[in-house]
Length: 206
Length: 206
DNA sequence: ATATCGTCAAACCGACCGGTACCATCTCTG
DNA sequence: CAGAGATGGTACCGGTCGGTTTGACGATAT
Image (cartoon, rainbow over the protein chains, first blue to last red):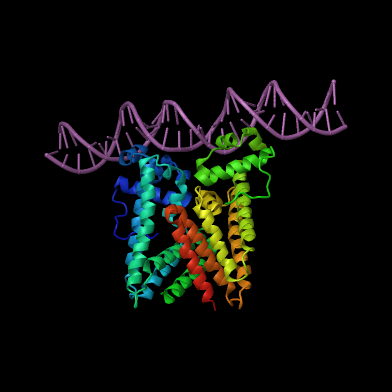
């Protein structure tokens, strides 16, 4: 959820501004509750420019969620490799999430929220963009598993059931995110519980 | 997610049919993707009847989600008290969820999904119904914590940190639900991971 | 038989939806 | 300077949204 450091803020590039405005509005209010007119206005762009850069609203949604997934994972990887390898590095992920959850505009995992918003379309394979969104969601979770599996492999001794343990940690992360989104006032408590559970599971690995 | 046994199926009561139709459509496609016309048609009722029974669409949504929360918790309590008290009864919750996740129309937790669908409205306290929805979501999670705390108290010896442990189990449950909703093909695996994590946390309680 | 109640279909309302056409403007490149 | 391309403003398209109105129909109870 952090603003990526390396990206240019407003180089007057229309597509960039539209993507940023859409990401913010979609995250705050949901894909279905935000119209293209409002996105264009918030981006300081015209609707024509929006449709010159994106085939459709669904296409814009797909682009936004893909970028969001990239940013989340880039942020997690960048933020965790400071910590010493091993258990500390895994628990650092939870500390990073704690920062995010405490931010004012926190509304849960943008990727999974978008999956919920577009749940109807992404099933029966109607639109290309809808399927693209579903693919991004799948990939988002898989990248979580990849990251967790890598970090688990750094343990000494490495766990024999790294895949299974990684999935448990993923469930803890997404569970804490979902509960925290529904109860922002208890976000810190839910994340602390998840972090402690992660530590206990790692310590008791087989 | 089961059909409640004790309720009359179709006693020609209009309000009942509207609630059932709305619940099904909302769950399958999301609150924002279903219009009142479609709900009335699916219920075999007229739009006038819908608006005689509910003040607004938001009011209907609030009624649907409240009923859903009741049904879920009634189902979990009824299904778990068959199992012997102790660890088995807690793990029985995960087995019940496993059945649910395997059903064809599974789309995640209806209550949390609705919270995501209505995330914009339920914040700034605009509509009464929107706040009612937020309250139902809060209560839904609290009932989870109450149930888990009760079941944990039955352990021998009871855990000293039952509240904290209950929150960990809640995170596992909702995490597994969220991940399973995004990846129905891996729903069973995610839930198995959550169940094993729950067992480990309970076994290692302080 | 009359009155009441809930129901129905259909037309209708203003607002907004996603998406497009048209044209004036601006800014880069040559 | 000239031309090309991207941009923005505005009006517009058909369709759907949540919600209301009207008037008739069929019960049920007095």
